[in-house]
Every structure is written in C-alpha cells, then in structure tokens.
Length: 315
Image (cartoon, rainbow, N blue to C red; front, side, top):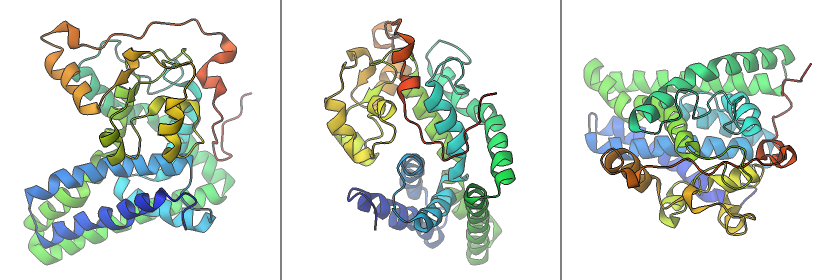
C-alpha cells in the first residue's frame, strides 16, 4: 500500500502505463505513433524517480527497494544516482557556484542552443559525484550498495531481455527498431529530459533569493500530467513534502515569488523563449532581480535534505 492515496495514480503510471508501451512496441513493430506516448512516459519516469527519491512511495523498505529497481528500468539509469547528484548537490547548493549542474555553468545567456548543450553536458558534470557515491556505497556494503547493485542489474537484464525478445519475434532489423522506439530510446533520453527541465526551472532565477530561486509552471492541466512537477519553488522550500501537497503549499508561500518566475506552462515558456524570443525581445526571459539575502536565510541552508546517510562529511 502506498503511504499517500495520491500515489495510486503514480503506481498506475509506473506499473501499467510504463510497461504498456514496450508491449505495444513488440506487437506493432516500427509503429511511429508509439513515439509520442513513449516520450511522455519517458519524461514521467524521471518525475516519478525524482518524487520517489524525496518521499518513498511505500512505507515498507523492501517494497521501495523493488519499486526503485522497477523505475530504474524505464528511467535508463539507477534511481540511486539521484542521491549524489540531486539530494547531496543540487538541493544543497541550489543553482549556486557549488552546484555542478548550475544553469550558468556554460553561459548566463538563455537560448535554445544553451538549453540543449547544457542538458547534454550535465551527465559529464555529474559523473565525478556518481563515481564518489558508488565508491562510498561499495565501501559501506550496506543497503545503499544493495539498492544500487539491484537497480543496475534490473536495468541491464530488462533491456537485454526486451531486445532479445524483439529480435526473436521480428528479426534483427525490425526487432531493433521496435525496441528502440518503444523502450531503448525513451530510457536513453529520460535523464536528459530531467536536465532540460532543471534548466527551465532555474535559468535567470536568483539562487540567493528566498522567493525567486526557482521558476514555477502553474498550469493545472500540465501539472496533472506531470504530478505537480511544475511547482518547483515549493519543492525547494519543502523538499521532504509529498508532491500531492505542492499546490496547497504553493498558494501559501510567504514571501510570494515575483511574476518573473511564474509561467503558465513549459510549452508556452519554450515557445516564448526559443521561437518568439530570437525575433521579439519582449518574449525573452530576464534575470530575476538579485537579492542580497542574509546568509542565514539562503534557501540552500534552510533545506532539510535527506541524503540517505551517505553524505560526504566535511574535513
């Protein structure tokens, strides 16, 4: 049983919709109409792994262990990788100088080229953090290593099995195409979708601000499809809160964020920034007004981030 009723919908996505697309891909090999739902569910795999990392879906530890391995299959990498890259780094330093995936690492400019290059470069920036985490987990030989090991095994075995089944059913050419369209490609791009989302949520925001450190996308329809992932400011303010409470808490934020970091939807923001912005400056994003917040009030220090007991200790 999930600890929150709202996660019955999470489980329907994860346990029914996620495997449904690969099954359809094996039934209708090469069907291009499967690509849009496959990419949408690829995005959702990142959202659900993110949510599960912050607030595990189940109260039972073994159920969470199995569920993490299951999500890893569709996300394309072990869920445990969120611990060093997201919990220990991004939430701790919140797009500041020590955040390895800070949106200004390459450039302070905001355009489609910078967004794409940033999203692709994040994996190499995060690699040292992941390597350090793997070493620490292996040295401890505890539940974190067991989780990492089982997630990696599930990921590899599942993809090998689906690829082999696709080739057995349809031959090498068509089988490989069926696997890539419905299973391989979505898992491959899922982490990049998350990096692109992070870019949109933080570029031209003020990481030192109590209210304007993150960009929110407030469309109720969009947020229903992405489990309120658009309400990012309240997530950084309250990282241990379940996603189903984001809307309620977002309305009560004090101080309230400025309009410059509140957008209707990701789609409209991308259209404005990357389609209209190059031709009409009024559609381009502008850096949020910088605040000299007292050190004691910086969001990166207010956050209560659970790093699952493997946080690197300062010397």
